[in-house]
Image 1: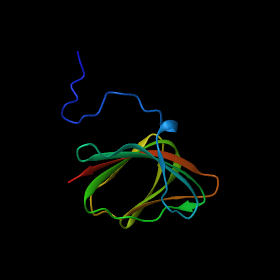
Image 2: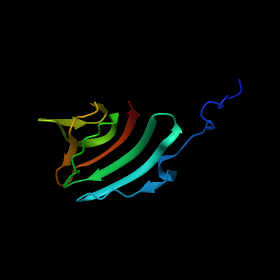
Image 3: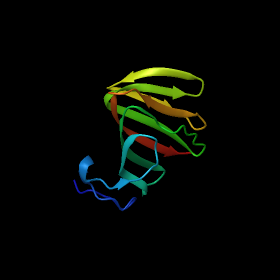
Length: 121
């Protein structure tokens, strides 16, 4: 079967995380970010890789325009969702509906890696 990519113009491919383009997001600690799928490559979706090393409390965010999911594949930490906090460990998924205030906090010695998926409304 031939890949019909006429809808998105995106070729079928494998993207190794270490080869994905890095980007900067100012955080108070050790944090790295990479694009897996930039906005516009597939309509209404983007994905990125986040690596954090404690101690860090990632800047809290609220997104009105998209729902978000974190797919945690390595490490542990604390996720804050609106007025509640919960310990997370890999493997797990964190579902963050649009309008939810959210952040991740790691203590010294903790590390976490996750892929986020944003789906525009």
